[in-house]
Length: 335
Image 1 (cartoon, one colour):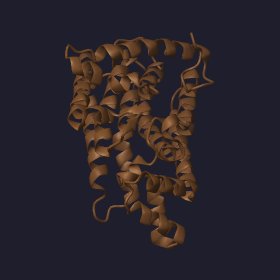
Image 2 (cartoon, rainbow, N blue to C red):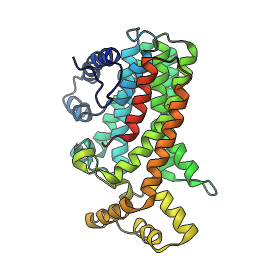
Image 3 (cartoon, helix red, strand yellow):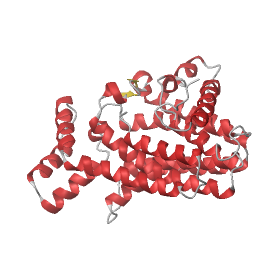
Image 4 (cartoon, helix red, strand yellow):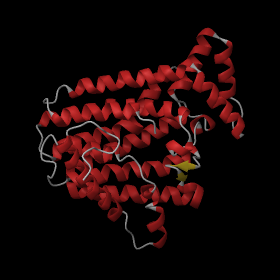
């Protein structure tokens, strides 16, 4: 039995071993949860699941549940619930972003078309909703609110900021809804279902909201620094689709305020034709060398520090230390 969590080293060995054991059970539950008598759904529903993944959200459920009884009723269902919801959102996101790959394999819409990918995402949402109903009415309420935020976050990313709205505030609100909301659900459900002290669930909710933003800011860096072989995602795909990221927002602001040639040149490329792979690769190279990339990395680190500060409200011990390590690992990851 491994004594470290996948991708999260240097935490209490006993705690790590307990969580690793339960993650194995959750992995099987995930597969069972998408079983279907429909021949096609058996393949499409497991496509992204079989491609792997960090299982960040189930891990957070279990870490939060370790503040109480990690084996309490509903904890493992909650871990499966949040991962199914995350996977469902990926099917939809890849359609909207026209992403050709996900987790190192062809995206579902590239294999079967947009309609099948969207319906597969809907199927996974349905299965997740069934789990929330099994856990209880409070879980149903929290899950539905999170689902609403996921939809609104995608909508607001698609339509962009309103006239007069600060683009940076708008972007952080999108990250909060699209990413942080599900991590907040994972943390709060894990703590509450495990019977941890009531205030722990609120701490984990607020922590999830903060660490989710840090996680996505770090992803903005990875989107430019990594390649498809290591990250499983095509670099710069958001650039091609015109989706704002923190580095591009920083470059645009600098171009507007200082009008320096480097920034103006990048903005011209951002607003140009990026359908050709060589044009996209060239823009990615320019952004990799631009100060905005390091500024984004530093912002991710500061936001992670704010999340860790929230954890200081939890009792000192192995769980709090593990959550702190979990936070820094999410932000410093290379894939």
